[in-house]
Length: 246
Image (cartoon, rainbow, N blue to C red; front, side, top):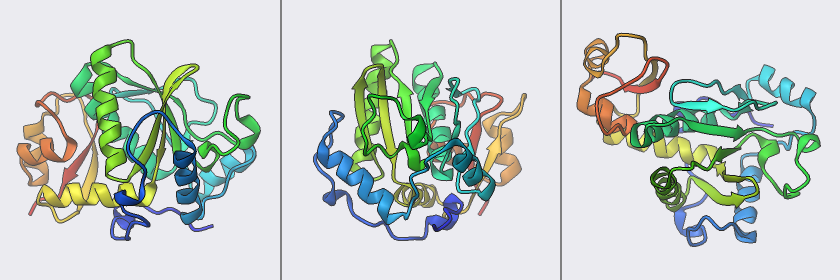
């Protein structure tokens, strides 16, 4: 199995398909959506993890990373809080944007699930065992649900994930396409004017966008653009993508 590297290393790799190859975007789920998720898992040469011990081995090898709660999102009592590195990046970016838009934490209810730990109602073709999928609790706030669904549909249109609105229990199943998402993030960084070079910065108490921008030789505008922030409010524990100074 090929090891999934860091997001910026993968960003230079070409996507396996274009958005035009995907079906019309919706959150209803379908056989075509499952076909696409499994095809991407096969193209990435991802193993379907069978047991807890195998999942732990993948963590030791670096194929999976631990996803930890912060001020933007909460990993809710998950027995296997691990995912592909790009999924961890996606959670970090989406959680930050979600809290900025909605004022509440994004709640992650599932990440990597070995085939031996799949629930009874799970599809036999679920890609959770590959580490490329996650579940997000559906908020009781209509405005938050609307915001999240618009974002997921937009990212489906960009060809970087497949999302399904599930009802039992109410949640969103999201299958991320790692290499395609890495390229997408790289384009976002390039559009911000940093040539695709960036660092992850953990916000500390007392930090501001101005102080972070000054420290890294960038600007508040670029920080807000890259991290898709509506305002200038940040929280201790957040992870920001910081463009390198030019």
